[in-house]
Amino acid sequence: MMHEVLHALKRLKERGEVTTIDLKSMPFGPGDEEALLSYLGCGEVTIELQSLGKSRICETFYPGVWLVDHYNATGDRIALSIEINRVPEIVRSQTEDISHAITRLEQQLNPDSTA
Image (tube, rainbow, N blue to C red; front, side):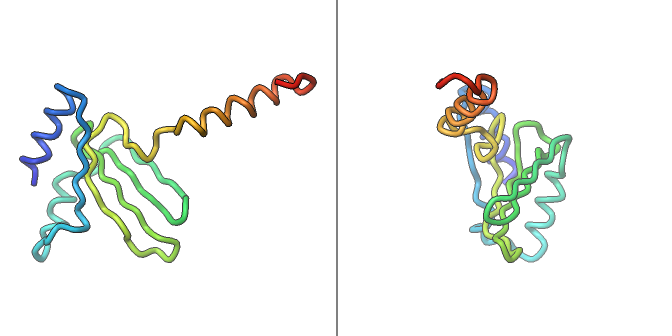
């Protein structure tokens, strides 16, 4: 698994190629998932999202390698993945959301105009 992560990290650096590895669907043996998560560790950045359940994203000990863990509203894990990316896709602002933010900010800064 870590060799796959290494190759994906090289592709990210050289070509900007993003890779996602779905850990939830992996047929881990007893203790293998825990050993992998321990090996990856959690580095300097941790992000928590609250949207239809909790999501925890942490940069591992290896910059560019992110562990993305999603739970539903009842606390059951619904997805676990490794994302090799500069910033995880889930935390990037969407173009539509940015457009709405521009409109709201313009309205707040210019309440008397019809921006």
